Length: 135
Image (cartoon, rainbow, N blue to C red):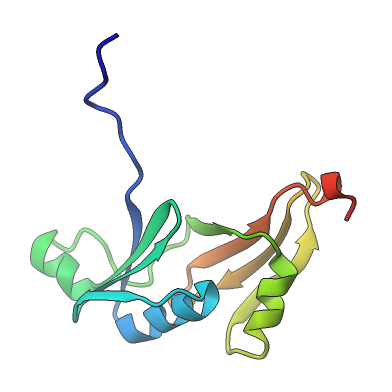
Protein backbone atom coordinates (compact mmCIF):
# COMPACT_ATOMS: atom_id res chain seq x y z
CA UNK A 1 0.00 0.00 0.00
CA UNK A 2 1.35 3.42 -0.95
CA UNK A 3 1.63 5.83 2.00
CA UNK A 4 -0.57 8.89 1.80
CA UNK A 5 1.21 12.15 1.20
CA UNK A 6 -1.82 14.34 1.85
CA UNK A 7 -2.49 13.34 5.47
CA UNK A 8 -3.28 16.34 7.61
CA UNK A 9 -2.43 16.90 11.24
CA UNK A 10 -4.00 19.66 13.29
CA UNK A 11 -0.95 21.73 14.23
CA UNK A 12 -2.55 24.54 16.20
CA UNK A 13 -5.48 26.80 16.81
CA UNK A 14 -4.56 30.49 16.70
CA UNK A 15 -6.27 33.25 18.58
CA UNK A 16 -5.88 36.81 17.32
CA UNK A 17 -5.68 39.51 19.96
CA UNK A 18 -4.72 43.10 20.57
CA UNK A 19 -3.58 42.15 24.09
CA UNK A 20 -1.00 39.39 23.69
CA UNK A 21 0.39 39.57 27.22
CA UNK A 22 -3.07 39.47 28.81
CA UNK A 23 -4.26 36.55 26.70
CA UNK A 24 -1.03 34.57 27.06
CA UNK A 25 -1.17 35.10 30.84
CA UNK A 26 -4.76 33.79 30.93
CA UNK A 27 -3.84 30.59 29.10
CA UNK A 28 -0.65 30.16 31.15
CA UNK A 29 -2.75 30.33 34.32
CA UNK A 30 -5.41 28.01 32.96
CA UNK A 31 -3.08 25.36 31.53
CA UNK A 32 -0.16 25.74 33.97
CA UNK A 33 2.11 25.82 30.89
CA UNK A 34 4.44 28.73 30.19
CA UNK A 35 3.96 30.45 26.86
CA UNK A 36 6.79 30.20 24.39
CA UNK A 37 7.32 33.70 22.99
CA UNK A 38 8.53 33.44 19.41
CA UNK A 39 8.31 37.18 18.64
CA UNK A 40 6.85 40.19 20.47
CA UNK A 41 3.64 39.55 18.46
CA UNK A 42 3.35 35.77 18.76
CA UNK A 43 3.27 33.16 21.53
CA UNK A 44 2.42 29.48 21.81
CA UNK A 45 1.00 27.38 24.62
CA UNK A 46 2.41 23.95 23.76
CA UNK A 47 0.15 21.21 25.07
CA UNK A 48 0.22 17.45 24.53
CA UNK A 49 -1.21 16.89 21.06
CA UNK A 50 -1.88 20.52 20.13
CA UNK A 51 -0.61 24.05 20.25
CA UNK A 52 -2.66 27.07 21.18
CA UNK A 53 -1.08 29.90 19.19
CA UNK A 54 -1.70 33.53 20.11
CA UNK A 55 -0.86 36.30 17.69
CA UNK A 56 -1.52 39.99 17.57
CA UNK A 57 -3.83 41.50 15.01
CA UNK A 58 -0.77 43.29 13.65
CA UNK A 59 0.60 39.97 12.32
CA UNK A 60 -2.66 39.31 10.51
CA UNK A 61 -2.71 42.78 8.99
CA UNK A 62 0.92 42.45 7.96
CA UNK A 63 0.84 38.99 6.41
CA UNK A 64 -2.77 37.90 5.86
CA UNK A 65 -4.56 40.95 4.49
CA UNK A 66 -6.56 41.46 7.70
CA UNK A 67 -8.29 38.10 7.27
CA UNK A 68 -9.01 37.87 11.02
CA UNK A 69 -10.04 40.38 13.64
CA UNK A 70 -9.07 40.38 17.29
CA UNK A 71 -11.68 39.30 19.86
CA UNK A 72 -14.34 38.64 17.20
CA UNK A 73 -14.98 34.92 17.83
CA UNK A 74 -18.59 33.94 18.44
CA UNK A 75 -18.64 30.44 16.97
CA UNK A 76 -15.74 28.36 18.29
CA UNK A 77 -15.02 26.85 21.69
CA UNK A 78 -11.53 25.77 22.74
CA UNK A 79 -11.78 22.45 24.54
CA UNK A 80 -9.15 21.29 27.00
CA UNK A 81 -9.38 17.74 28.31
CA UNK A 82 -8.09 17.18 31.83
CA UNK A 83 -8.10 14.31 34.30
CA UNK A 84 -9.97 16.26 37.01
CA UNK A 85 -12.07 19.35 36.27
CA UNK A 86 -12.63 20.06 39.95
CA UNK A 87 -8.87 20.06 40.62
CA UNK A 88 -8.40 22.64 37.85
CA UNK A 89 -11.21 24.75 39.29
CA UNK A 90 -9.62 24.53 42.73
CA UNK A 91 -6.17 25.46 41.35
CA UNK A 92 -7.63 28.56 39.68
CA UNK A 93 -8.98 29.71 43.05
CA UNK A 94 -10.05 33.34 42.99
CA UNK A 95 -8.15 34.20 39.80
CA UNK A 96 -9.98 36.86 37.78
CA UNK A 97 -11.49 34.43 35.28
CA UNK A 98 -15.07 34.62 34.08
CA UNK A 99 -16.79 31.33 34.92
CA UNK A 100 -19.70 30.79 32.53
CA UNK A 101 -20.61 27.35 33.94
CA UNK A 102 -19.23 25.77 37.14
CA UNK A 103 -18.03 22.15 37.07
CA UNK A 104 -21.10 20.22 35.98
CA UNK A 105 -21.87 16.59 35.09
CA UNK A 106 -23.12 16.56 31.51
CA UNK A 107 -25.83 14.12 30.30
CA UNK A 108 -23.32 12.38 27.96
CA UNK A 109 -20.96 11.56 30.84
CA UNK A 110 -18.37 14.31 30.75
CA UNK A 111 -17.71 16.66 33.65
CA UNK A 112 -17.14 20.15 32.33
CA UNK A 113 -16.75 23.79 33.25
CA UNK A 114 -17.03 26.65 30.81
CA UNK A 115 -14.84 29.73 31.06
CA UNK A 116 -14.59 32.87 28.99
CA UNK A 117 -11.16 34.17 28.03
CA UNK A 118 -10.22 37.86 28.16
CA UNK A 119 -11.00 38.28 24.44
CA UNK A 120 -14.37 36.50 24.75
CA UNK A 121 -13.40 33.03 23.50
CA UNK A 122 -15.22 30.25 25.32
CA UNK A 123 -13.06 27.55 26.88
CA UNK A 124 -14.54 24.19 27.86
CA UNK A 125 -12.40 22.36 30.43
CA UNK A 126 -13.68 18.79 30.66
CA UNK A 127 -12.97 15.23 31.73
CA UNK A 128 -14.47 12.17 30.09
CA UNK A 129 -16.92 9.54 31.32
CA UNK A 130 -17.90 10.85 34.75
CA UNK A 131 -21.05 8.74 34.81
CA UNK A 132 -19.10 5.61 33.89
CA UNK A 133 -16.82 6.20 36.91
CA UNK A 134 -19.82 6.47 39.21
CA UNK A 135 -19.63 10.21 39.87
